[in-house]
Image 1 (spheres, one colour):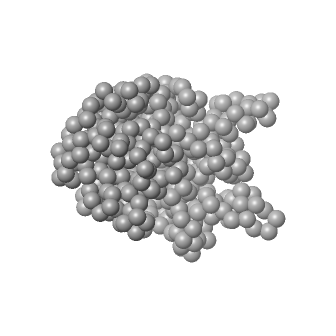
Image 2 (cartoon, one colour):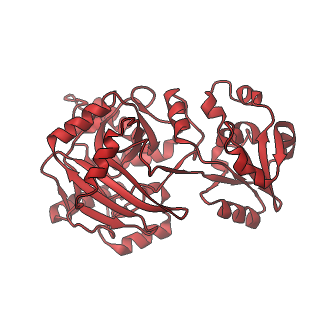
Image 3 (cartoon, helix red, strand yellow):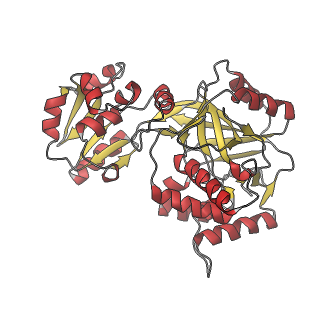
Length: 404
């Protein structure tokens, strides 16, 4: 069962934190980092992606600044354990949408078993980087993003009701997304939510590296501390939890650009029906997702000829995994190419433009349905990297959870 609890969050003391928030660390370019630092000397990027200073390496500098900001009152800790309700109002391809959920302290469980279910593979390098930062700062500076079933829409209703009140903090990011935060310390409400999630599973939507890093930190503390107890704050991780039934969940695809393998045309002829570009939208209604390939100035829609190919190519995977376009891409169309050889692009137009400039090919994939994420996670399977892109990203700097 998923165990969540209220915590004494650390947050910016001011109400308008537009200049203080930043995107997640792994999507910030060097240019954007410089821009964020110019917005405010207290921008969260100074902690998430700190720079070495004097004798302090970047992790020690992040720890130094974190303590300094608290001592100066830039950041302050809430007196009462609270849940932190969070709303994002955003534009999704011309449609105004609102996503609501809440920040909580989520009990850590082994990533390979238990109520918390991952769905994507992770890499050693970013986990080592985040672990060094966590050891130095002793705080979750940014959350994982989890989804849960809320069949009766109990939490959906609670979130809507809270959103009618005045928020404790607001911000607006460069993409125009409006962020709002409410601090809720009502013990009955907290207890109601904790009980309602006790029978649920949490499906990690984003932040797989951060979750595994928190688990690794817990094991590190266990090996060092004779008074170890996983009931302490280091036994929990900062999590933003959102009901699957929330109307603001938006999952974008991540397209691929790559040098065309020598055997790609052979694989297309052998395994796919080749259809016009206009067939793509119609095929999205089918169980098995199609692909689009852009090569040498031409678009082609690819449809797997025989669904039996999916089981043969992915015998150890569930049906939901096999039916995904990203799975078909990596297991049938171009099975021999490692994930780190691709260039990943969010926009289909940008992918095609890049393919033209570099004389490479672009492969456009459909978005992964949220139900497929749930099914794959329940089977304890992991999807190819960059299979999901939940839009918008959660901001860093909204709330911080200490682990000491």
